[in-house]
Image (cartoon, rainbow, N blue to C red; front, side):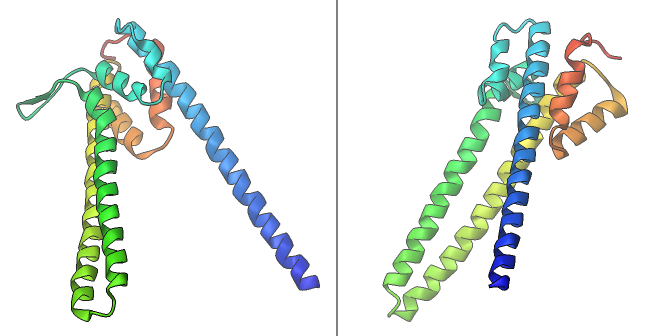
Length: 196
């Protein structure tokens, strides 16, 4: 009886710890959402963009961030509307990864239905492993492309407010650290858009 009570108490403590972690994460995300929205809205208003209200709409805020950054020229190629790419890129990667995951699941089901024939199981297992590796690479490349585009857009935005090593540190930290991008945008919201 005492062992059951100890297990229940341990389970309750774990559940309490888990709920507290979720509450802290939710609180941080809400703070990030508010700081990012206020900073982006103020920067858009200062830049003369009339659709600053998009800073508080979940997917539209990424479009506004790209619009605020403006066209990006890289090795002679120009990305004219980076905001659109910032919105569509995660969807495209998700759809492609979802399709490949569905294909892998269909092959697993087909392989389990035809398990009597060993000759079919080997190629099905190989294709499933290959599909899983392709999904992993696709998600990795998609995340790198998304973060790279975000870093380029942030470079264009923040280069109006700071320069040199400070600018590079802001770009690196806003890519790697949660909440940093929101704090930087909030900090520079009332600064004049000139090089410091």
